[in-house]
Length: 79
Image (cartoon, rainbow, N blue to C red; front, side):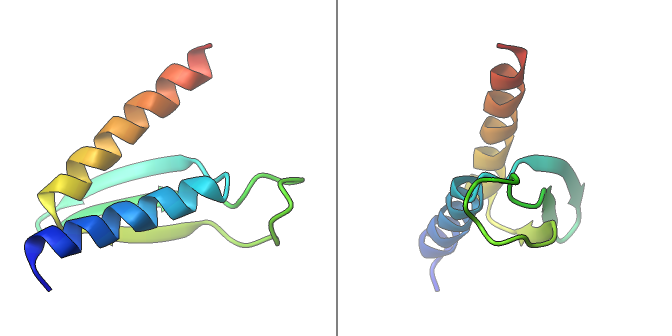
């Protein structure tokens, strides 16, 4: 898989988790990439209850994308 395809897949995964009405709880950087922890879906969202999940991002583009998502989430919480 090319770097572009890898970044695209990681971005799609992030978007899918956010569509499930999950929120980003934690972002940690290490030498192997970025680990993002998502909440369980919001109660009453029509989604089946599930546990929080962790994903590891390795592409630089997806890592920048998640940083922008965190900024948007913080901004939305302030409104």
